[in-house]
Length: 415
Image (cartoon, one colour):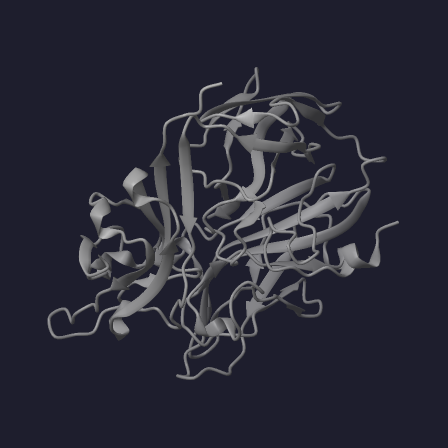
């Protein structure tokens, strides 16, 4: 029997279990039905909101949902807060009751005052779905808005259906490398074995649960690290499409871990069924003198849009900068082609990079490590000027802000 918590669970992120909601977890069997607005504007998105309720569907989903032996369903959205102040996102399947889409609990309230790109998940009653190809969805937001123009950009609408593993024939498998309790180096071999009664294995995606930069935008640094962008799986450790079902995980920029890590695999067969393998537990690092510090943003401003002026945040460095060998600045933005400089402790470290009117992930190398200070540091974005006398969009810096990774190298211990 499905637990009441599992059935009613509405959670803020597809890959996080930090608030007690599941998303895919080890031993789950499921299908993912992915939809993205490939022909949409603003970088391939669906606009939801607008001054006159622009966009939001109805969208005809090009799927025939497999509901045989289904036990629960959920929808995951790729949601960008396009206009700050937008709230009340809801979704409806096949003209059934509207389902509230939750805000990320890891973003300060009210979340609509902080720019963000998140991947919220909401439970969908199975009776709202049809087993044929006639499924349609609508989305809407609240009319309440501080400047009368509510709007989200939706880059993906993805339905995930879970099955009774005892009744549904499905792929199975496990990781054969690494073993539980292994200390991983900078190049860690991940290998799985798998089979399926439905035929060939189509793909194996390797995942890990650990602390890293929060590209999911939900403010949770420790979780199963992956997400989707325009219906493509990304942010995971790698994928294999043929035997020997292995990838190499380069850990040279993965932060030192406060807790042991877990690694698992999503095993998908030719029939499109996915099995989340059991996790290999208690993994640690032994990287021959390499250490990586994750400096998390502090005092992140509301409405971080560079057209509205300069904005600044803080971060704290605890490592010995005399041993620092490299650093990166990592964040998610929208329309960074209109940014006007990034400054670290008043040192200009970047002019601009990336497109206009589109999502972008930044991994900017810090070429001058002397710009870093022990203790408190300040990052600032410049104000976007007018172009030809007209105001332009500027860059949005999405939650949780600009994260800093610092590599340190010390002499390895001799044993």
